[in-house]
Image (cartoon, rainbow, N blue to C red; front, side, top):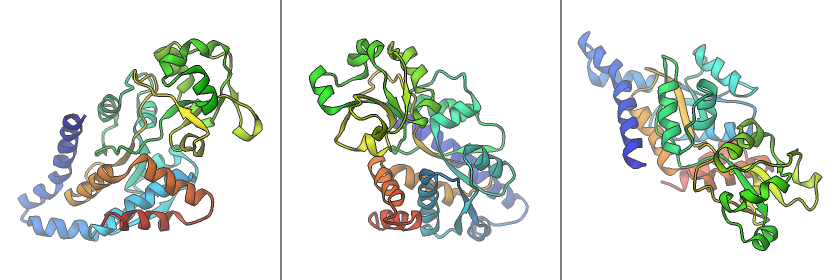
Length: 294
């Protein structure tokens, strides 16, 4: 994984430096290019979701700590609104997830593994858009079992549970359905459910099978056992920054790589839960998270 990510990071970083070097050909110095970069404000989009607002504040905080001018702009709505704002140059950067972006730009792609999804995404992006390193933090679809039920079955993987899928009607989240997880399980693990029930866990007491995502409170709890997906039936959904090509300089791209190296799923889930329960704002949790890494 490391070699693939380094390859694409290097390509993106090289592309980002080109505007500065072309400035030198016109008589401007590299130093002047860096100073110009520091004056240009980087606007990070945040849609209406808690996940987006937290990620936007994380990117903005790290960019600002690198000496760059950055702020968060609320665009409301969801992915479409954020991408429209990026296309219109109202924002500079959109925090996203690799699999969801790939599905947006190339819904026919069969890529499922993290590196494969990132590579396919990089190829599918329209001219004028770029991504840099993806983080280990993810929000991929997962199949989970009530912990007691999992122990009674002795099932720890999707493959082990697959023969039981035909008799199961899992309780699934909206994101699980939107990410195409039901279809991916059928195609990649021969796990075809009797049906699915889209409701909250509290609506169906005694539920034993769940379709959710890694950042959900349910997946992070001890109430369920998240089944391992060793064959990568479900597509990777790693955090990744999407931005307009040429809008970020080398120092900004390096700052984004810091987020890729530091942000974990556990960290992100904890921050989201604090915001969702009203214990702190998105900017507060982002600042606290970053301060602990200094």
